[in-house]
Image 1 (cartoon, rainbow, N blue to C red):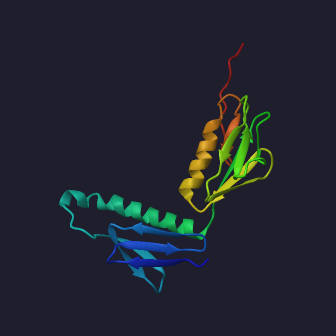
Image 2 (cartoon, rainbow, N blue to C red):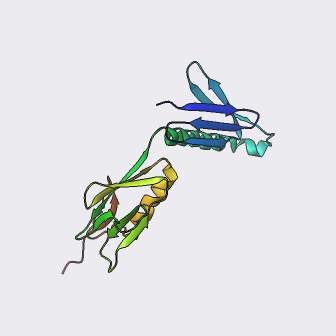
Image 3 (cartoon, rainbow, N blue to C red):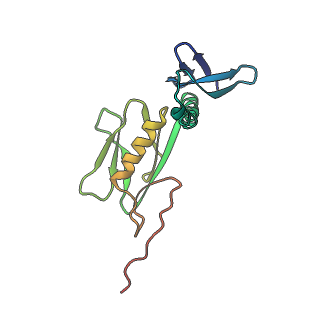
Length: 178
């Protein structure tokens, strides 16, 4: 994948351009770039003057900036995918045919169907009536929508029915003994 990284030390900006997206990040610490080895290093040298009490916080800030840079590199170069499955009698998912928008329709044991309209940056695909996936370029949007769909019918601990992530296992509780 062709991903380009642009760094402006004067404006304190890091811009990453990839095949799927273009994202920028305002930095508080300086970056050290080795062009031969293609390595980015986040230094503990701030752009601004720091008091002694704030120097202790630089280590946590450095870790945060490293994780943000990793997230931006992943978001610009790959598609983020979240797979979900429905577990329960009569639980189904399908695309809404009557609506013009890209929407998913869920039958989750309620007296009504539950509709989810997908935002412009997200797409969905249904593998079967009980398995579907959500994908897009923003990690935040994909995981937030997946969590919101899961919250409509969280897995209950006695039978395990509900909306689950693909690799999630529900530990079942023992029911009442008669």
